View 1 (cartoon, helix red, strand yellow):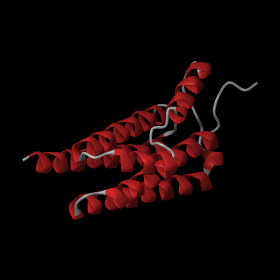
View 2 (cartoon, helix red, strand yellow):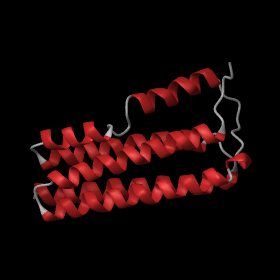
View 3 (tube, helix red, strand yellow):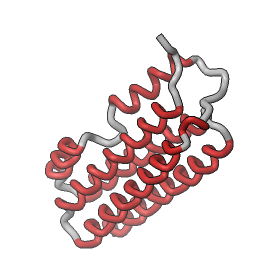
Length: 161
């Protein structure tokens, strides 16, 4: 049994995370109580969609992605699988259910911030394993995820004041 990931498997995991994020934010948009929150969740869903496109493009030249580094591949596999299995973003049905259960806008924003942080952790791990060409792309995605957190924090502050 192989004990490492192919570049394609890593990209597929990233696409799964972004798809779940898209579905989650679309669910949150449907149940948002204010127009401003609806716009925020719509924007976040669009951003996740853009990230899917980036990873799809990476997949087109995946044969050239070399996963590198002296890693304990068993440990890396467990780590990545736990991130996916514990659902950086909930499945779309869970996301819609979660959105309906959240009565508090602050709580919804906190959950979104938590998901964005988990995405950053996942991308940072991927970044430790890829060549420089992919590092540049993934670093850009990490910065965008950080921007999402800042936008969410700003919205949270607006709600609280």
